[in-house]
Image (cartoon, rainbow, N blue to C red; front, side, top):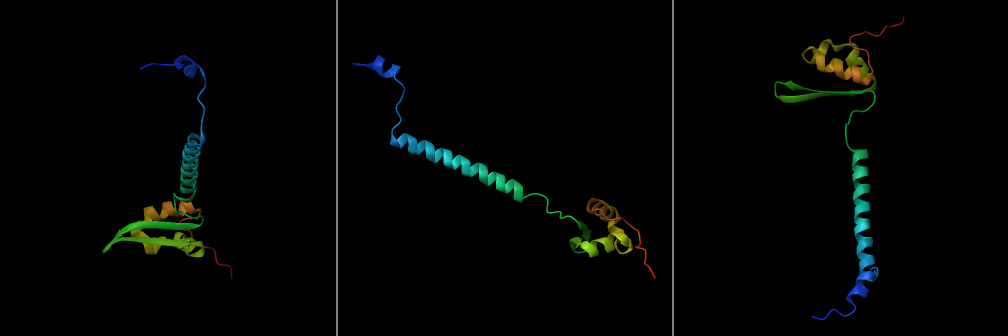
Length: 110
């Protein structure tokens, strides 16, 4: 096989045609979409714990059960945990995370 002008071709930079540019653009677009998709997923997933809410999962007689409350219901459950004696430790931790005082009856003004 005769290599005519082989050294000349090797010394010149590659020239990109339309197909090469299109292929690089498609790959770059796919990578950009993948990064954006991962970013959106990272921002929208994770802990479902909301501010001012408690969520306690515990064992019950028929399997797993949960106590979920927000706002005044959560504040009342944290202030009067006597109804939840079996899950006291978990409830105490959930109340601490939500910022509610645990086992403190609210003062009633007369």
